[in-house]
Length: 165
Image (cartoon, rainbow, N blue to C red; front, side, top):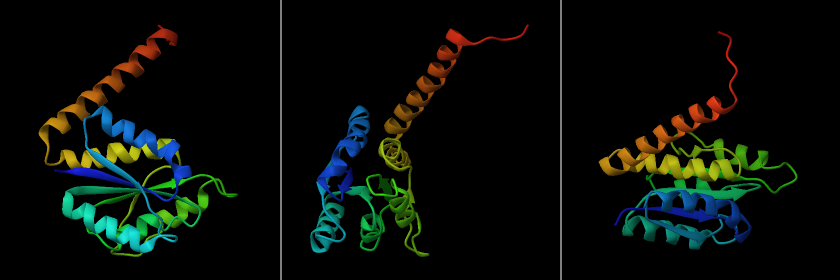
C-alpha cells in the first residue's frame, strides 16, 4: 500500500501538522504520523524510515523546529522524496528551522515549504502532486481542487470588485 509518512520532531508540532494530515485525508491519501527526533531518537528515526519505506511509504514529510535536522536525517537514509516543514517556536520565529531545512548539501535534496501551517498544508499538496505522477485519479482530484480555488477567487472578487467602465 502506498502512503505518505509524516514525521514530527516533537508533540508540540502536532497542532500545526494535523493540518497536513487533514489535507491528505480530504483527498483520501493514506498516511502515517509519528513522533521521532533527529537529535533525541536518531536510531528510532532511522529504523522508522527504513520500515516505512519497506511498507510502501512513497514520500516523507518532516516537521521540526530550531536546529531542524529531521528532514536531513531522513534524506540521509532514503532516496524517496523528502519534504521539510520548518516549525516556528524558537526565539527566531522559525527562521532558524527554515535555514536548517533548506540548506542541504549537494546530492541530499529536501524540498522545503513555508514555516508553520501554510507549510503543513503545502507539504501535503506537494506530496500528493508527487504521488499523482503515477495516479490519474489523484491527478484529476488535484485538478478539480485547483479549479475550485480559481472559481472561489472569481466569486470573492465579484462580491467586492469595482471596475471602471
